[in-house]
Image 1 (cartoon, rainbow, N blue to C red):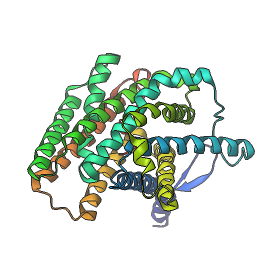
Image 2: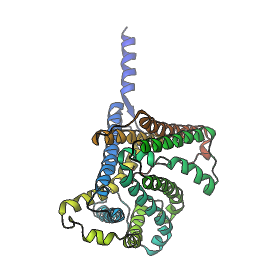
Image 3: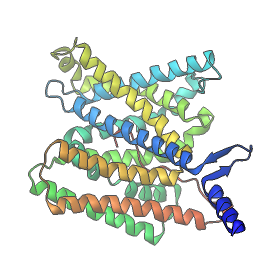
Length: 357
């Protein structure tokens, strides 16, 4: 009897306590709490950023989406520079790479930066024209274009089951377009921007791998140079599309609350890079993609509730198809990676983008 009780006690202790390679012990409960907090932080930052950007872009007073996007790029550059300075001042407390400007690196990153500004500009234009509720469906073809462009550019083939998942996503996309049209709220320009955003997100994921060696595989350095180049690349289209006069005649140009909101948008844009990396570190790339899909579902529901919108059953079906297809694609790719030999396994790419997702 005593032996049985001891055995049960030992099993319980093993279930609750694990030891790492340094001999330190930690409970599964504590690990679960850490992961929950990290995932919750990712959801909070990502959803807040989308709603905040929608508020800034949907302003009736200021129709200058390119300027709003460029300003957020400037904030990211300043934050990267500030974090680099703090890292040198407090090396033990803050870990951030040095981001001293280098003309050669900036030129090497420039082609990717052109793709980058297309990605973030079309993301925000899609959000402005479609709103948060339909944004997930409007931008849902990213996975499909990942498959197409990976084959065209990298000659990578995709399995039948993954293609089947893409078919579900495409079906959900077209059903959603049909239902938005039936409801009288469809914006064809928003759909066009969403498709273009999906193309540029896919191109950005592919070409990032080619440019990373130029910045010693540092995502933060790449973010610094991308956003710095973007600040200058945005100037011509801002001038061409006449956003300077709109800004000059903007009634809240000297309103500190407006600039506070603009700065907050930039800060959240910078923060999403950090929390994305944090979520992948505490979970895995596969889990991160699953979390992103679940977050998109919650984001859609919140937008519908917040706007007190009435949506048809088929509209919800389209969203469900897109999210289910995305989740299934992530699961299929993760399973294929687990079955592949270790030496031939490709790195799992995060196929979502949080500059506006």
